[in-house]
Image (cartoon, rainbow, N blue to C red; front, side, top):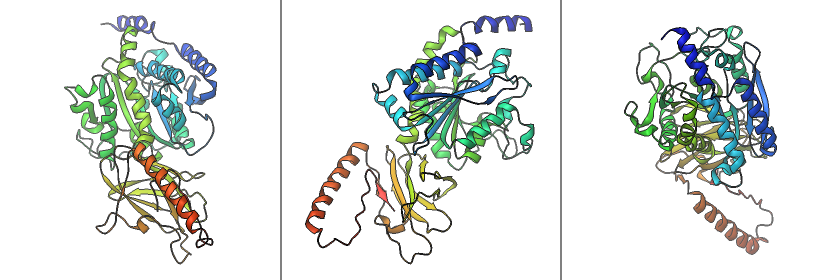
Amino acid sequence: MTEEDYNARLEKLAQGYMSNSDLQKAMQEFNSRCPNISRLYSIGKSVLGVPLLAMEISDSPGNMDAEPSFKFVGNVHGNELVGRELLLLLANWLCDNYLKDSLATTIVDGVHLHILPSMNPDSYALRRRGNADHIDLNRDFPDQFFHMNDDMDLRQPETRAMLNWMEDIHFTASATLHGGALVASYPWDGTEDKRRDYFGCPDDKTFRFLASLYSRSHYKMSRSKEFPGGITNGAFWYPIYGGMQDWNYIHSGCFELTLEISDNKWPDASELPTIWDHNRMSLLNIVGSVIKTGIHGRVFSSDGKPLPALIAIQGINYTIAAGKKFGEYYRLLAPGEKYEVIASIPGYRSKRACVILGEGAGIVDFVLDSESSSTYKDGRVLEDSGCNSDSKAVDILPATQLEFCLLLFVMVGFVCFLMKRRARRNERQMSVPRRVAVV
């Protein structure tokens, strides 16, 4: 096929897809239709000056609170189009089903979902992979092994916009939508010696769980004959360097997957409804994972001040930071395991919690005492003990059972308070609503 024939074929295929102006109009229409749960904003501009428009979907868009943030990014490569279309369909589905569908409501009420349908609008218009400067944007990020992208002044404007976006918003997790295969890929994307080999990151087990969550929810991804279970380690598939996925995890505390959502990079537009139907539950479940799995909570000082503590897991060489304003943390972890969680910050005594994580999320708050205090003031659960043989783990209960137990606990506590209020008049009463443990 000659270049002219190829370009003519792409132009014919493009007739069924949104142009850049169509996409911008569709995003504005979505925002106008759903103003109570959305906002539209720009994270920067492309080489040719096209705004990189993003949408936020939340019950409190634009407001900072203790909820986690998740981002979807589409059209990283200009010739991979499906993500643009699916992300608009996802936004409109959430708007249509908010307060009607339980998962839609959980996501809107519990997550700040940010959607960037097109990271590379210039190359979409040019019908090619790289941006207007012929740079592959998924090779333009600083790399952990090789230093070809260390000079930030030389980064492409689309790359700089992404880096600034990740600095502005503390994303818990994210996913980029690509095309050309049907698989969920996870870090690391490269190896130290550039060989094609399995090279897992410190959270390899958690990433395999997240990738499998997407794959199993997909209509046929998990049945792949090329990729067992429909998932792959990036470096084992084919090593890349300067990729966005590894940068997210290393520098932003953000767990990112690379999702190849269609075998064809540019399928006929008539196939889009089917591709959307095959990916819809996977997209929803991966967003919901930030609040429905792992461990989350808040960190306070003993006098009630939120602390931006570091949250570490014994045996996993990776830490995340709690939020500065609310002290909130969301730590994604694979279910069915025992974890020793450590909260620490200079000037305070660190504390540990031993958690047996079930299928649902574990909620554990930490109260840290100043190093100047002589004794621990709290620590009613576990007393700063880790997962040693003498400590008791906090067994995370399913949500409904947890709520029942908490209600029963509150009722019994209230009766005891009435009976002993005179004897305990001078004692401080502490209530911890909807928390599995406070350490």
